[in-house]
Length: 128
Image 1 (tube, helix red, strand yellow):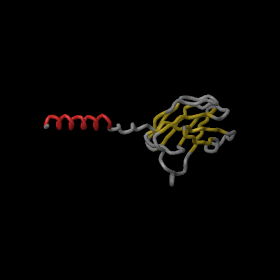
Image 2 (image 1 turned 120 degrees about the vertical axis):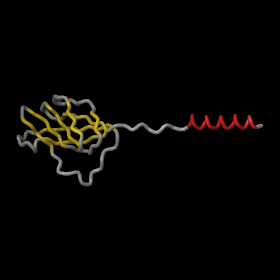
Image 3 (image 1 turned 135 degrees about the horizontal axis):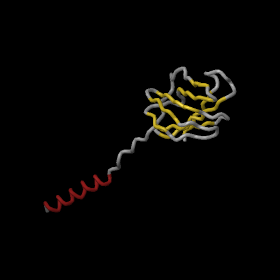
Image 4 (image 1 turned 30 degrees about the vertical axis):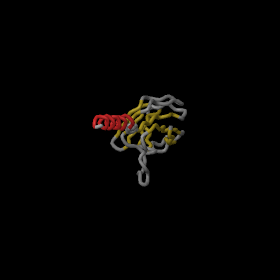
């Protein structure tokens, strides 16, 4: 009788261990840049919290690969060179903004015809 009880308990323990779901794998925050302008972008730099991420140059109407960020918002500091001139998208602050959850996102960056350093770029955020 004791042997049957031990075998039964062992089977129950095995079933519990085998059937316990694994915790979900923590995804990264991954962001890519999409150039939706008529200009080519060079030396693309995105800064979010302590992350400074550099992307490859992007021709007009192309997208980058995804890059990993530790923390990010729906917008960030972005610096791009267009036709030899540096243009900056400078957030004022992040008050009231929530950090992004792990997942894939796109910063669609547009550029207008302005020659002003802080007035040329605009950003559209998209969850992929």
